[in-house]
Structures are given as structure tokens and as C-alpha cells.
Length: 338
Image (tube, rainbow, N blue to C red; front, side, top):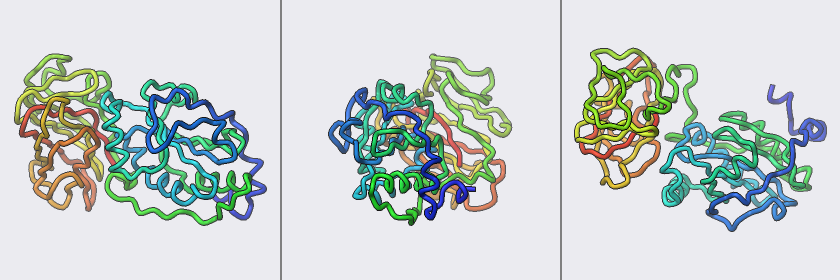
């Protein structure tokens, strides 16, 4: 189906199939810029522009990132400008130091607009992370894509718009070898969905007695968790956005069905790094450990980010994930799976 939509041999035919969706909106609402001086549509005329809306803990965007890096690397000298618009989801993602750290750790060299006030997001009428908007050399949006996937189609759009502008973008596709969090989800075995741990958006919470918002509370894990239920054990305070551990030894448990378990978490602002230990079905994860823990399940919360805790090499079945924090101050925001 992809080949029928747009082929390198038929760029002149496909050109008519990329309608004008509007003008490239202003970027003036950005609250800051990284890797670049401020950019504006007028100054970008003559270049093809890809605008990418992201937030650094979004697992779907992290899986898209290898292609963004590759496109910027391949086509930046041929008339393409990739611009990342970092519109934060969680409060800690408003912190410029956190965003700068993420940019450095993730190897992002293209310009990034900080969009802490959602002004650029609103100018585009955007609703998604990740979201791609493709503008031609005349500053007109000609294509968009929401979510992961369709990388070949997106690259052919880039090549077509470069060709229209008189640049030689070629017809070869980039080749990426993702690792860690950037590896695509194993969709065929994915039976668990994103789950927030703050009370405003959580689901499947199974600790006896239910959640107690905004107050310290002693929770426990029930004797049995059903698939996609989660629970707390120990002294926690569940706030609207995150759940914070008040005393050492607290635990989160989740009954999941997926190859990967990831958790957005970090030490509270005033907390020192927090050591933790992960178990699967009550045992060390061994070869099923994620990139942020060892075979015995040991890891440390050093910064607020996504931590990859489980990556199973074998058949996927229902399993129980447990993470125990050995010191207070851990904050958990959101489970994602892959």
C-alpha cells in the first residue's frame, strides 16, 4: 500500500497528491531554543521543514527518534530543517535543565523549541505526541503524521518536497538500528496499555481500600492481581500527577502482558538518588532485565525520565512486575509497555 501511495519513480505523479494543508504557523510562542537561535517561518523559506512535537518521556516519540536523527543527518545539507518542539506533559519536563540533559543523552543535534506554555502546540492545533508536520520550501504544510510508524512514507514526503524545491534528496531510505527504549513495541504480544500512577488519570488500581488522594497512606498489595491491575505497598502519597514514596521499602506491583515494562519516574526534587530493586514473579529478572537494571534487578533513580525495567527475550505471558525502593523520595508517574 505504501508503494502505491508514493514511489521514487513517480514523484511527479505523487506531487499532486500532497495537498496544501495550510501555512506553517508561527514559532514565536516558544519559551526558549536549544541547539539554535530562534527560528521563524519567514527565515525558513527556501527550505523544507519537518516540525516534530515531542516530550522526552513519551515512549512513542522515543521509538520515532532514530528516524528523526537519521533524516536530520542525511538531508540537513540538502535543504531540510528538522525542528523539535518540546511540549511537556509532566511538570518536571518544564525544567530546562531536564530537557537539556535529555537532548544530550539522546543525541539530538537539530534545533529544539521549548514550548512550556503550549503556544506553538496551539498555533498548530496539535493534539498528539509525537506529531510530524511537513512544510515545503514556500512555507506551506503539505503532509502530517500522528504517532509512530509510516517512516518510509514520511521519508518519501521529505524527498518529494526537496525535489520540488530543486534539491537532490535522492531516493534511498535511511537505515536505523534502534536499541533500548527506541526499539519498536512487540505489538503482536502487547496486552497492557499506558497506565498513569497519579490519581487524575489512573486506572486498574487494586490496593485494598482504594486510593487516598493527596494524603500519606499505608497501602498494601492484594493476594492476587488480575492482568492490568496495579497496586502500592508501603507509605505513599498519591497526588494528581505522581505518587511519592514517604518511607523506605515501598513497592509498586503490576500484572502485565508485554515484552517490555517501562516506568516514568525519578527522585523527588529534594531527594537524593534512590536505589531500587525489580522482581518478576517474585524472582530476579535475569536475562529479562531492562537497560536500567542488572540481572539481579538492581538500579538507581538518578533523574526524572523513562526507565526501561523489563525486556523479555522469550515468549510473553502474564507476569507480575514488582519494584521496591530502598529509600524514600521516589516518584512514579506512568507505566508504558512495549
